[in-house]
Amino acid sequence: MKHKRKGFTLIEIMLFLAITSLLFVGIIVGTNNSIAQQRFNDSVQNFAELLKSVYSEVSNPQSVGDGRSDVAIYGKLITFGERYGLDGKRIADKYEQRIFIYDVVGRADNAGSGKVTEALKELQANVVVVTERDELGNIMEMGPAGEVQSYVLRWGASLEKVEQKDILNPGGNLFTGSMLIVRHPQSGTINTLFSNTVIKVNETLNTVNEDKDFTKATDLLTSVLARTVRNGGFGAMQIDFCINPAGAEKPSEIRRDIRLTKNNRNVSGVEIVDLDLNEIRHDASGVDEQIGNKCRFSN
Image 1 (cartoon, rainbow, N blue to C red):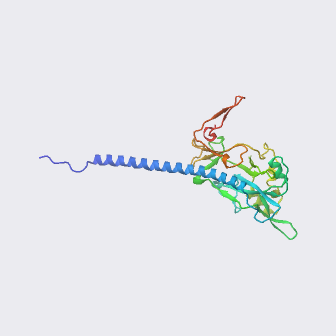
Image 2 (image 1 turned 180 degrees about the horizontal axis):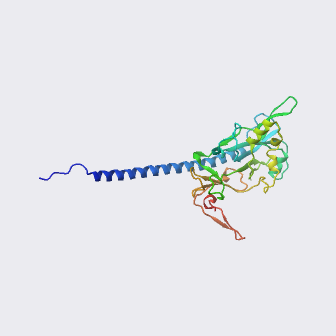
């Protein structure tokens, strides 16, 4: 008499567990990759929205907080690479990419119709103001001209330069410099200018308030406005911000390009370039220029 087999053999059970484990691992890995991609997309979109919000604020400036009629707000200064926190203490290296946004103020006089940098320099534009004087009128303390905003990219993403010269040096490609988004005092036209110089607002204020030597702060912005572009001054140019995903110690193949067009005037000039856009422009001199996603296809 034959007996019917009951249950499963040890080999069958082991095969079942192995296959189930592989399927489970595949689901987990796929889910984690999907979450990481979504977070990266969120960090890219959020930074683009930050830039758009700055253009909106410059287009619709608020009044100066202390109600002074002789002072006007002309726009915003954004710094990339300041090493000091708002509390005046040196901050950890991992926070070196905290982005600061300052109000740009100046005299409310009439300025010439020339370049916006010349007009702002004429009106003694700055991002810091005197906040305290003694009874004789001597400066006792200086501070930011308005409310300071600070920003860090979401989900650990990093902001990098287009160039990939330091791919073996983690952090060597971090984006640094200063950007002005300002209205021309006479025409009201919004201008976007960039300088490779990091205007160290926090560090300067900490130093001058401690030493009581305020000369470095009184022309903090105008001293850079007076320089040529070659010497670290401000100029109109296309700006490409490269967003690198979290955990990528060297430039990743999926870096996203957020571009500000040259002479950008409003939010429409903030563009998230398609990841796979590999577009080359050929000019008459025979030089090929990458005008697609510079962050992915740059050398």
